[in-house]
Length: 366
Image 1: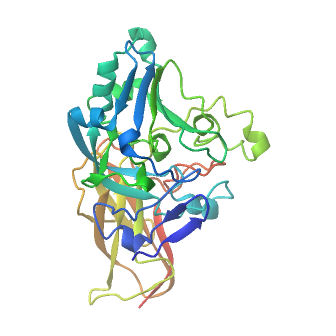
Image 2: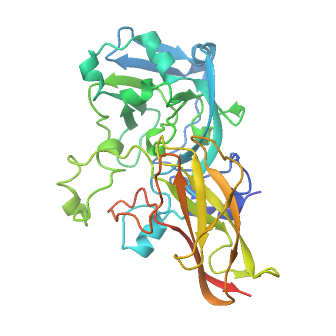
């Protein structure tokens, strides 16, 4: 039985301990949970997904209909936009939102029909010029949320139709049907994009000229400018700032844990392990480095996930660290597109997309 670290009790929002999280390339069903309301238990045999909006043929698809389409598998990391919010809060300044540590991420194998195949059945009824700025909106109407009566989000239509983007209507996770916690019976999966756009318990897909109008697209999950430093100040920026889509390059140290006592080997090195994530469509991760001072860097060995475009990459390194108390270790990642993790990320009121150096501090090295 896994012991979870609870970020909040209701709705269910929790993340596993980092050492447990990075013990497996594919995250089991005991990964993080992010919810804005109760978890519905839906009868898959009665569930339908409506495809509507700017389409030539509206569809109402059953689970069997979705299963009858060509099935596609993709291994990708799914990350809460607020992952590492605690670090932003404690390193920069106070932010709003659940105090996520570094474990609000999961790496899974997802399987289901490609969204572009579903949309091909419906037919896009927008002129080419309008498609460039159009969106595909995802919605779940099965239960009310904290800030809205339903949950919705959207991604650019161009991303949904891109053969290289692997956007799915997922039916399975890690070779088993989705569980209620993770969206049973259908979940949108958009690799490289914030988890907030990967709507669970999906019941409607709408092609439309603009973004979703839902609260969680328009009034949350945006990187507001630094001057939006309060709820009142943020009010004038929500309509001006685009919704967060691609997540940034990132890395996290899972072992050793913060505040722990670490033993060096005969060469004076300690074992460091963690995960790294590419930015958006920029994967795979091609390099991870670790440092004891932020000046001298040692390249880590890439393990599971090496070469995977959408997946996290697990890594490990041996790093020379002087004996003593109050020691720290840093990590930084680079992806194929050349995105390099920087020392700090831009502060924003909602504390999203933090990707400053991975760091573990207050170590006692013996």
